[in-house]
Length: 246
Length: 141
Image 1: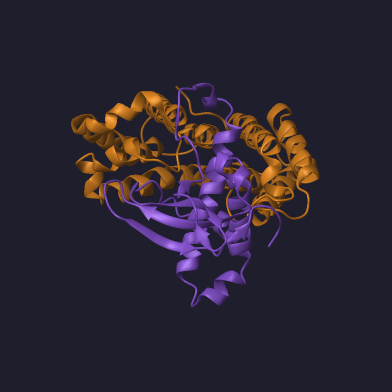
Image 2: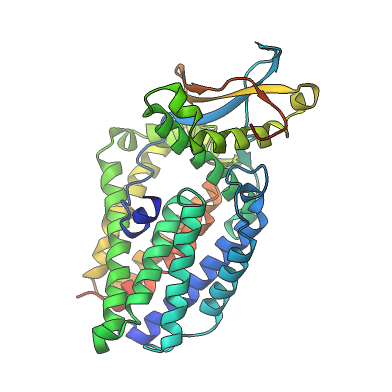
């Protein structure tokens, strides 16, 4: 099985990222009371900025940008600027880690449009995205591996018994009193995160099940913790992982 | 600074779920507290799976919770109460607390309330990070 070609990977990345940004911006439009009078982030109106961001995301999601086309470059730069504006306006990321990865994917797509990389621009952009993706998994896994509470299950027992900040699925609440299950879930999480960088060195056939497992992990977190944007942000990096590597 | 972090992500999150800063409030009558402390963020359990696809309320709660968390870190680093009360962070917290307090049933019977940020270990003591002066339930002080 051949790796994805650069144009294929860029197109897929654009569409998945665009869909993710549509979800994020749509959610923010419905929750914009936080930016209105009396809201925690009250100030100048964000409605126009969010509507513009929604339009840009829709173009990204549904219209393939030809490599090297100046309008494509402008679209990516506009979305990058929009993300910086939203972060500053919100006094920080609106949704933690997923904002960071959305931005890194946007950066990679912007790099892929820059003329001074010549014909290698697409590869440079995809490589950027792939490196950020494997770094995110590996560093998160390493941080957990250094914490004994992840090995003995206590970290997840704390999570399943917590009252904030995550709204937990009712079905997992009883897991707080199951130390063995929490330990196994902790080991599984660390295993997925620490092994995923291997996607850069194994054959493409072996990358697909690895990425499917990682995608399932994100879907699980979306169901259990409500972290739906993480699914889009990290799956948007998978075309790059199927295109680059040794 | 927050925008710079977009360019340089740390990828170091979810390494533990220990004490989380939380926002609580209580009614005030005159200068005296007249109710118990109540959490300002409500139910942390759901049965909905639809949020896998679209989760505006959940992500708004997370955004406001993260504002509380960042505020707790920032307030702990400030030298004195004057510096805290003069800051944008305190204003942001006040608006958040006022808006959330208005959704609680106690709020209709009171004209004043106060809020606090606490850290709660799961089965441990409560650490008070910051406690406000009595505030009007309506307004922009």
